[in-house]
Length: 195
Length: 195
Image (tube, rainbow over the protein chains, first blue to last red):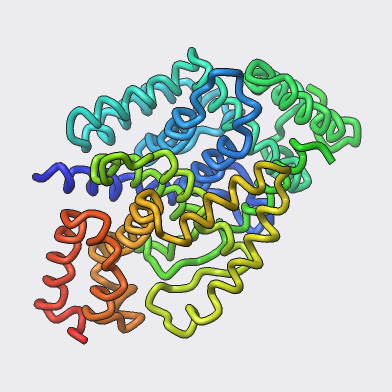
């Protein structure tokens, strides 16, 4: 098989990401978001918020990570970030998916893409920490702009939101302050429970 | 309004791209694709096919273009690439949309993003020519893998496909050869009319 065919087979395989439903409503509230369109939105968010990354952050590496960060969901499905039970075997399911999907590519691209995804997952570099923060921030923006419907449906509390999203504060306190102020308003107005 | 709020307002506004339907079936044929998830797929395609760009091509600029290339459709809608009538006022509709959407951003980012989009539209640089080629190539891959259903539905002929997709050949003859061989098979097997 030609290397071009291998690359096209990879693109065909990850098309399934457009059919993985997330627990996030579109801004219009017309339906739930899928992981393919989310990946576009969060990569574009990174380009738009590049000035909010720490000095020296390679924003293009952040974008590459965000284009690839969810493709394992084609096999492993989406795990809602407030779902403790789902998180138990998430890593195992996603490693197997990464083996299969990145393995469709020719060498050395298979290893290069896998390294980008591994770096995102490890959250040890400032690029992966910024990418992870934006990946958490964007569904919060959706919740804040859709009357908190997905949070209410899933009984998400203020305490959970604060605990699960500290990586936003770690990446950039200004971004967290923006989010936290608005989440606090949702609690104070009685839409979201405290704990 | 803070610059962060302006950037978030931009992200909120372009969320509508997830609700613009294209004339392309998903690889699974379960439904038609939207322009948001298409933008993710074609940006990821650029990362995957970076080696097929002409030497010296800035692939990150290509990716930035592809993340932004369709956002004007939030206001202007998608124009099917074989729709001659729709193309008549496409440029005018899209310029007005670009004025509004990029105008949501603070300066100088508004001008920077507009320049990326203008460069994509002009197709004069090798980055924009490669981006445009991939943007044409990916729906062809979908048609080739879904029994040509969208082409048949829209009565698209071989002559139209060849005429509308010469930019693929211009960007990389190997990519065009891959596509052309398979389109020719669709004609020779009687699925697509010659002219």
